[in-house]
Length: 191
Image 1 (tube, rainbow, N blue to C red):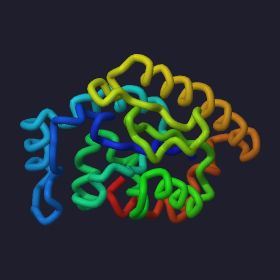
Image 2: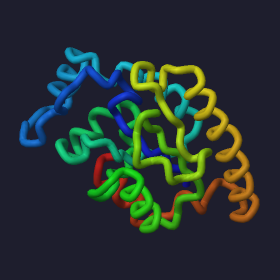
Image 3: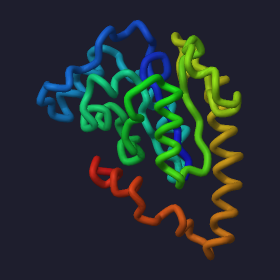
């Protein structure tokens, strides 16, 4: 399984668009949330990520954005639009890179990962360079360089790993379809 760790602000929309995310105590319906997001121009580049990930069904999303402290899992999943079925949850509380490391440590099924983050983020300097894809806070995933880096990971690493899994499991990516704790959480969110 391949995981994309995702921040929202500066990656899926410009940083200055929102000073505080949707409050978690609001009993919003999916339509209310979508209306709020459209009105604020949030997630303006979500379609780019949707297009990039569309042909790669073995890539899942874990959110480490500060939104994880202010929104419910249901609200975060709604924000992801058509990527909702790929949403595995959020990283644990703590600094971003530390929370990503702890999440990865608890999920041995992960074969490879990338971290989509702001170029200005300070605590993400620790991972090896190829795992961090730095976004300009004004262009996010709409930037061609970011798209090229994501595409390189998606086409290179995921294809090579999928082929080796097919060969070892007799085809069909059976190893990726096991019902481990990760997949059970996916079903809980409605994926």
